[in-house]
Amino acid sequence: MLHQPAHQRPAPPVADRLLAWYDRHHRELPWRVNPADGLAGRRPDPYHVWLSEIMLQQTTVEAVKRYYRAFVARWPTVTDLAAAPPDDIMKAWAGLGYYSRARNLKKCADAVAGGFGGVFPDTADGLRALPGIGAYTAAAIAAIAFDRPEPVVDGNVERVVSRLFAIATPLPSAKAEIRGRTAELTPARRPGDFAQAMMDLGATICTPRRPACILCPLNEGCAALAGGDPELYPVKAEKTERPARRGAAFVAVRDDGAVLLRKRPERGLLGGMAEVPTTEWTARRDGATNVSAAPFSAQWQRAGAASHVFTHFSLELVVFRADCADIAPPAGYWWSPAPTLMSEALPTVMKKVIEAAIPGATQQPSPASRKP
Image (cartoon, rainbow, N blue to C red):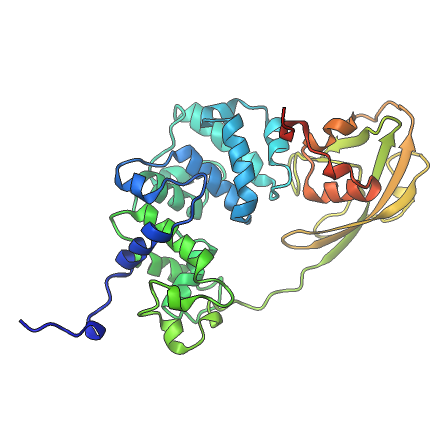
């Protein structure tokens, strides 16, 4: 019987090569089940998969780890999370950004606990019907937690697939083609591990800059590598210029160090979060930037500025500070004592404002993070 020379034999299917690589080189992540345990029959907790996937949207793995561990320690099950007051969830989420995710987290927990007896639906369609779960998240939970052969496409997978097939259509127009190609590659066996392997490959090997193609398990047959320049992919449409907005923020500090805060409206940007008073800036218009826009009369002094970049615009806030006696706060405001200030549901932009007015204030650990 004649044997083909090794260099002439067809490469094993993409899924086989990728899963073999994943078994040896997977990332250890707190929400993930080890591949060996998975092969032995242990399945990931759908609550853990859902929670991590919501947190990972638009956020790095390293930033999510600490928040994920804190949430699971405080609310071990989805029913525990459903029973939590919304303000407690917002406070625990503070600093993670994209705060509509936290509001939808509560709504989804309520729906699963109240409508499904604390058990997540096990299909992508069933999951997508829940608040805050879109096509990607539904596919990820269905594949990873329930072994459904759903194509899971995040930014890492877009990059891997667009290079593998040298897809020249710019994003976001290429998304449908990339998803179709991913569906073709997704195996019926171990689809959850395959999805996580694709993510790991994009995060560690098939990186945006200087991909380590020599180490890639899929380098044989990669069209972008054969073309000589994998970094050309994915092709992206030209970015539009991010608008710059301006406004003012007012940090009132009581004699004992307490800071005056208020709660933002539930709907809209940073909805439901705590803030110091600011002028009425939005993603579409500037707010006033002078002291005449202060929420009440006081000896306001300019204390610097704070800059922050949101997804669709950048913001520059002029910061004013006033040292105040123990005045009664206006309706809807409260004095937050200095020792517990950082445990409030303060978004990152507000922490920057407070730091500008009270240097060192944001370096104090919140009570929840202090060791006994």
